[in-house]
Amino acid sequence: MAPTVFALLGPTASGKSRLAMEIAARYPVEIVSVDSAQVYRGMDIGTAKPLPVDRAQVRHHLVDLLDPTERYSAGRFRADCVDAIMEIQKRGRVPLLVGGSMLYYKALAQGIDELPVAEPGLRAQIDARAARHGWPTLHGDLARVDPVTAARLSPNDAQRIQRALEVWELTGKPISALQGSAPASLPFELKGYALVPEDRAELHRRIEERFERMLKEGLVEELRALRKQYDLHAALPSMRCVGYRQAWSLLEGEIGKSELRERGIAATRQLAKRQRTWLRSLPGLQPADRLAADLGHAVS
Image (cartoon, rainbow, N blue to C red):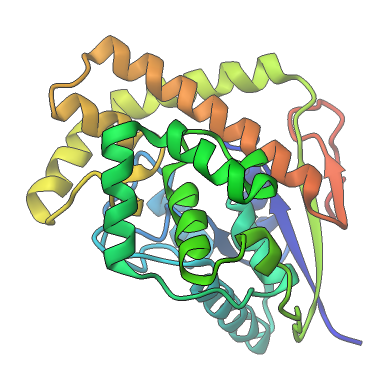
């Protein structure tokens, strides 16, 4: 029988990372990050990257892979993740997938779709339209040609709206019709746990507390240093990450400190809501409430 690989998935601030460290204290675990932001070097505070003490205690994979000027993809994640899992198993260790980038987990579990490669010129045209009319308007355009995809995207989800419109322009087909066509052949079985907090008020409290802590730890200063080190611009995927996008607006003089806090917390709550929606759509996940007092040994 193929070996089983376990995954802990959940919205931001749901307790995934701490639970993973608790498990690693009991078993010979190495953690594989399922996080589209932690792949970037130097983006530590705003991504809640594992602390150096935790990384010294437990080996973490797929963290600090790229400079923030580079782009990552679900397809590359799938290949990198499978490689990491196989290496861990060869050493006689236990891989544990941990994160909240549900698209990446879906790519691993269900395969990669045969989609066209990015076309920079077309993306620039789409970005120019968005600059003139706003992403909600382009979201409306997407709804007319691909209502299935538009229904699951926020009107301000610039990166995914851009990609869906790009695929439509390149193929004449909606991205929703092209997704799910690839086989999900893996040399192991996946067993995922969905950490979905029932107490949303408590999750929101944790999100607020967490973002305030990031500000105190120097999120804005971290971004300021990254802007000096790298040739960054606001449209990069790394700079679209929650927290960094709002801090960018602060450094550009577009908002003040109080608005940074309000926007950052609101954006993080919206992210958590999207993550919960993804979790409900992914098949085969076993639910567990990390915030529940009686979670106990739900994952063993």
